[in-house]
Image 1: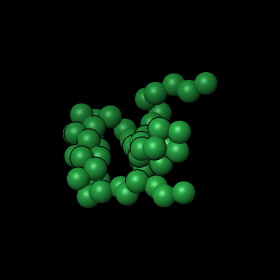
Image 2: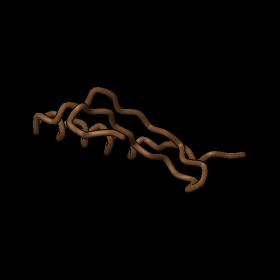
Image 3: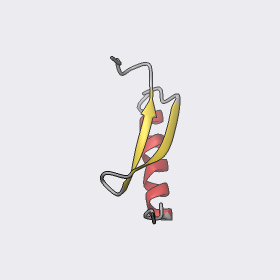
Image 4: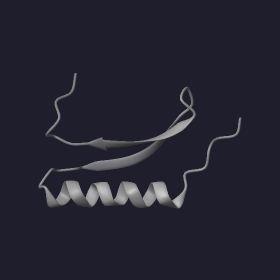
Length: 54
């Protein structure tokens, strides 16, 4: 199965988002791109202690 390519513009936008979150003092402990096969698209995921989990 072919997967859509994660392009440089997506990487740059993700990087900018992380910079904005950092400047806003929102702690991001982990960020990663994950390919969602059902939606046939890439998702940028974050891990932070500021967001409660299940």
